[in-house]
Amino acid sequence: MKGSAQRKLDQQNFMEQVRECRDNGYLLSSRKIGSGAFSKVYLAYATQERMRHNPKLASDLRGKHHAMVAIKIISTAKAPVEFSEKFLPREISSLNATYKHLNVVQLYETYHNSQRSYLVLELAARGDLLEHINAMSGHRCHPGLEEEEARGLFWQLVSAVAHCHSSGIVHRDLKCENILLDDQGLLKLTDFGFANRSGLKDSLLSTFCGSVAYAAPEILMSKKYNGEQADLWSLGIILYAMVSGKLPFKEHRPRRVLHLMRQGPAFRPGVSPECQDLIRGLLQLRPRARLDLQQVAAHCWMLPAAHALFSGGKQVSWTQWGSKETEGAKEKGSAKSEAKGAPGRQGAVQVKETDHG
Ligand SMILES: Nc1ncnc2c1ncn2[C@@H]1O[C@H](COP(=O)(O)OP(=O)(O)OP(=O)(O)O)[C@@H](O)[C@H]1O
Image (cartoon, rainbow, N blue to C red; front, top):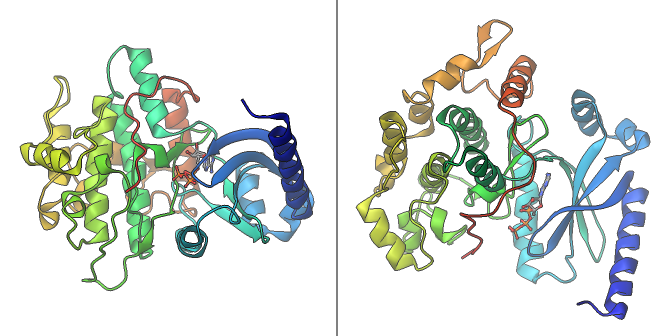
């Protein structure tokens, strides 16, 4: 239990944050919608005045027919120097570089003072993919999502990751908790705290990022790795989690995980052979042997998603999908997800993995 002195301090801090947001054109609500290691995320409203000064914000919110945003408040004064000087700037620059994709959370603007940094983000109000998988598993009394729903979501995720890679950004922390859903059921990739520039074609990374359960074998073996190929492995883990309702290699000890990886994923009865083939194509131990994003999009299991996405009578290619210019695609995608009835934030957590290496 918090003491009354601590409660008073928290209250004072919050009122300061309300004032700082108001000075920058946002009305901060007391509704906390999430928190991270050094951050809290609140629901907030953009003022008309702010929208007049920020065309990016105004045009996005006009399309959504509301003024709600998510404000991530980071206590830079309390966070380690490495976080404030390395990871936060990377998160901001990655979000700026990947702007303009329907399935990547939009960063509208930032403001800072000596105590805190504020990130004004697109709101994704329906929780994360992990919660969705668990809620749907409970609802269906069957682990995982129906393949049709998994396909629609995975298509959006692949498109978001392709957009990041083509913008020169590798995510390096792809996992169900970093994939949010908005109130139209659209998928929004978030949390670019470990993202990095993919840089030159053959340059390799060496830092271990992300969660053990989603990390590629070459990362667990502390080898130098290609960030794009490591993201592909994580995509395989996410698709497995979607259709199975659990993680394929659920172990905290890296050596034990590597042992399970060598054995390959085991599937529950009912997962289609095509879906299994796609997951196996991504979960290849040799990074170069993994399917690339183009091959994933063209895989036979994915094809019905491509056919389902039509814009004004014209089929939308997977590279066009998600581009903010393809407005028709957005409407079609929303309607499809709405029909599926993506639920809100509920359900027991069963496959959560939060250990960042
Ligand atoms: N744009 C958003 N819309 C709605 N909820 C959000 C949004 N961004 C973040 N959240 C919520 O806040 C939580 C924390 O956000 P985020 O993952 O970005 O913070 P973090 O500090 O990077 O977290 P961690 O320390 O776990 O990596 C998310 O899990 C999610 O529930």
